Every structure is written in C-alpha cells, then in structure tokens.
Image 1 (cartoon, helix red, strand yellow):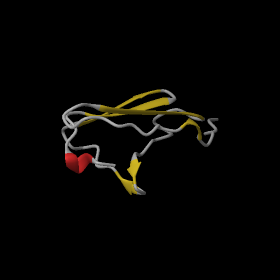
Image 2: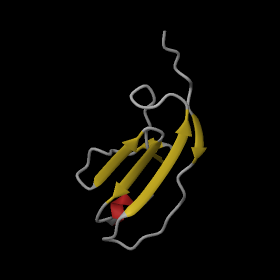
Image 3: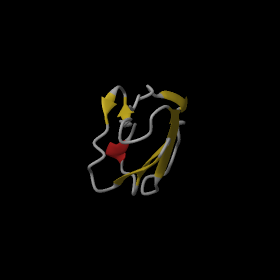
Length: 78
C-alpha cells in the first residue's frame, strides 16, 4: 500500500535582479511525496510560466526544484 503525503513548501523562491542577457536562477524545496507524485509549477503574477521555451531550464531532484531562465530578455520580466 502506498500513501501519498501532500506537499508542504519549505522554501519559496526568492526575488532576484539580473542584467538582460544573464541567467536568473530560482529554487524551491518541499516536504511530502517526491516526484512524480508531486509536481511543481512555476508562476509569475499568478500565471503559469511556459517553461517549454528554449531558454528555460527546469531541474528536479527529489524535494528540490530549480528554474533557470538563460539569456534573460525584457519579455521575461517577472
């Protein structure tokens, strides 16, 4: 028998300032049942971020998730 544990966010991503062309890095962590049972979605201004764009990289490892926005441009402004 497998019982999933609802996630509880332990660390929220922090705001950051970067220069256009640089990489912005965000991370969060949680406790609960790890991926694939728990999935993290990234939001900006309460709207989902389209991480399928080529300059977005998402990384996950058990209870940690990272979002890298590479070669940041003005329309990436969050």
